[in-house]
Length: 447
Image (cartoon, rainbow, N blue to C red; front, side, top):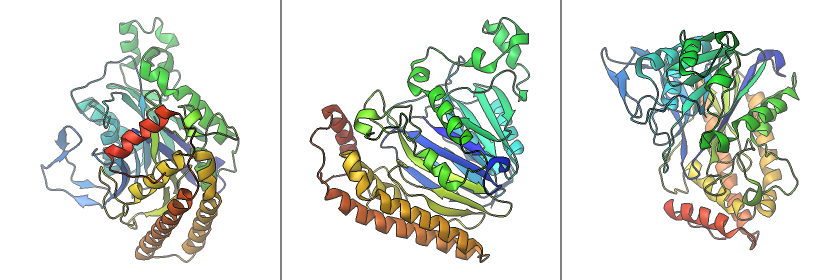
């Protein structure tokens, strides 16, 4: 389950496009940050996506992706032209292709590699849907099948694109827009598949084409995934939070929204209160089996993009680090694998995260104020540094230093958290849920 949001320049404090996404996946599914430079490809070559290969274009753009380690595409990302995209699982009345096609994350990557604007990226996805359709397992340990929606933005505008198999509908964003794990476009949108309405009528979903409504006639209302996902609740929550700060939305506020736990309460803890109502998702048991595995907030300027990425799970326990585009992305080494590696960005934090989960109410406060102060420092230092008009090499080094600084602090926080005795009153099913994943991941915790 995921949430993606955008605020256009007419409602942001800095008059720039702000984009944000939490990627919610299976709880021990590692995520990675991947940078791919602009590339010229040989004529007639093909590119292997997650399940199928398709003809490659002559030139692909420089891209930055946040992605599960085993998938070709990404949950969210950006390209050198200032296009940013996030995708969502949506559940519709159309059947799912389980044999394999292009999954939503593949479509996202191709759109970034081939689209120089938000509208062009939207058209890339539409064309690929028409040619190859969408389908295939999107789950890590447990199989998952769904259709996709996308929030696509560039320096000036943004679009929501929602799909049901090969059918699609799109709506242009006016100021603030969010999407979640549900269809959100009402009526006929601004543009749509030429047979979208006719198909709904033929299926008997829509009795009167004059009263067609994409949400009403295409959303799956009885599928268990749709019921469990709580997409409508999170869509309303993210929309409400952004509407509350119109004209004042900035990077720090977007980070705050991604960390939101709903319902808000003083003694909120994942062991008791985790649910898909929260924007910051925590796994609890087999009924609540997903967690936020990586988060991103993007500020898209005319010449430079700043992408604040955790590179780690659970934004409420993480720190956002700055990455710059184009041609200034700091490399993440060593590469993320399926098993615990204390030197890897994602896994180092995952140890901290899982230690915190053993007593969230007492362990998170042991470093939260220090984390918040360091993150504010990163934002302030980035603003000052950019006034010096740094080169791409200097931007890359600045980013690398912030990543190293954050990782050094996380090592200290791991030690600090371990000094706080873990709770003896955790639900045994919750403890067992995470103990099983620790074993799978070869991650040993000192409680």
